[in-house]
Length: 325
Ligand SMILES: C[S@@+](CC[C@H](N)C(=O)[O-])C[C@H]1O[C@@H](n2cnc3c(N)ncnc32)[C@H](O)[C@@H]1O
Image 1: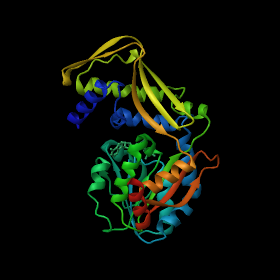
Image 2: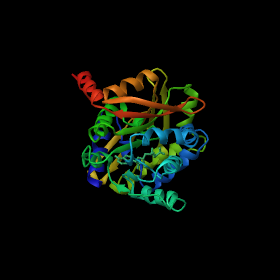
Image 3: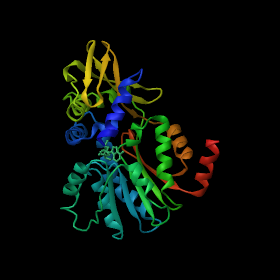
């Protein structure tokens, strides 16, 4: 991990438009800060998805279990606070299923077990610590009926091409009859989106700056965190919410593990993360281009967020191949 981390930082900070990979946000402090973000009043995504899973969990469970017993694999499960309502609804309908949360952060999986297991003695929990790209490659389609969960609009962090590539990776691990439950954040008024990535308590700022602190600690760098400002932007037409750290002055940063010094001009930005917001046409296109067929869609009362069932079908996979060529 450390070598990959070093390579990624070297590549990102050497680019004309500097970037850092959001994949490295989640060390122990990053996990803690992400929980604080999710609990902040401005971060509507959690509340909206909570509401969908709490109030429509039974309807979702009915759709997911329609085709019979299966295993549930959650990609990037985090600490599992939200999925509890869905697991309870699934348990009300059937008990012949197992829940496999996959997360790169072993710390998150420990928190998940502590959050979910004590009050659910019936839960068959089989956590997988690892990178979901690698975990997906290890699945043989058809060896069990599978339902993948990809909640929290995590897809929005992949960027346009990355999203389709990732969805195709998921689709490649699935056989006809398998399904994906995907959470997607919808386009809405810019002030609501911007506030979600700039909470008054400063958790999102600290979450972004924590990646610089991680580079200092793990790669022996000397970033001065006070010299970088957190700045989110939202383009309501494309639906892209992008976060940057902006250098407050001309400065140099040494990274001992790379034996390199990086120069930042005053006002120069480091691109940290994209959180894509979707509309119906974008969702329809994503679903078709990645080899799925749309199933039931669930929305919160404000219409700000959606959890949708996408089905793996031969027909859809053929159509995706045609779209590609
Ligand atoms: C934004 S959190 C979302 C947590 C949860 N799904 C939710 O909706 O609240 C993203 C989670 O994905 C995990 N993650 C990020 N990149 C990953 C990767 N490549 N493989 C596995 N897990 C990853 C992080 O550790 C983190 O727990």
